[in-house]
Image (cartoon, rainbow, N blue to C red; front, top):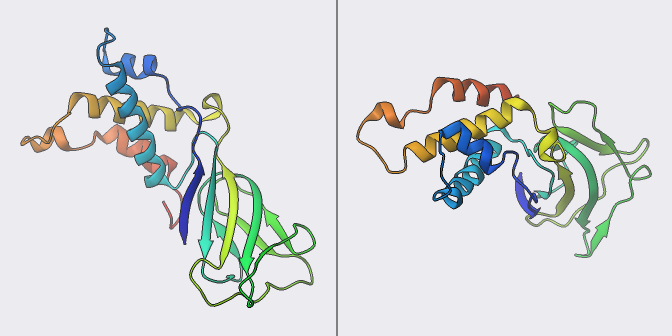
Amino acid sequence: MRFKLKTAPTSEPVTTAEAKAQASVFHTADDALIEQYIKAARELLESETSRQYVTATWEQYFDEFPDVIEITKLPVASIVSVKYVDTDGDTQTMVVTTEYQVDYASPNRPCRILPAYGAVWPATRAQPNAVTVNFTAGYGTADSVPATAKQAILMLAAHFYENREPVADRAKFVVPLGLQYLVSNQSWGQYG
């Protein structure tokens, strides 16, 4: 499974002011730096937990149709399209309900895409990335992001701010236990 970010989120789950409060910063000189740390913390945590916090558009690629397509970037908000390269090398777009069905039942497990009742997956050309699923994922706006995710971003951004360079003191390099707990709370299943 391979992913490609198509449309990035338009905002971060936490504000610069929130991150400054977490790190006890009372000036504006480091605002741009703190914004970089927020983005880095969000990207790292999204990667670590297989989640998308603020809504973004993604593509997931498969070399052929599996029995069940699992979209493993959580939570999936919608399936935009399912496309495949047919045996003649032409790209085809599948039709929801008549050719496939979507199971969004659990926001904490992969979204599943299955053939529609009585249908089967079409044959694909034997090539890399023959099947492309375009989807949106995320909780919506920053206001909808879980508090545990926001707190993890704030703690990690503050950790980056306090520890800007590689350090010889191993204790300063270790991520705080509270942050590890928040990240494990966001992780799920075999993908987390």
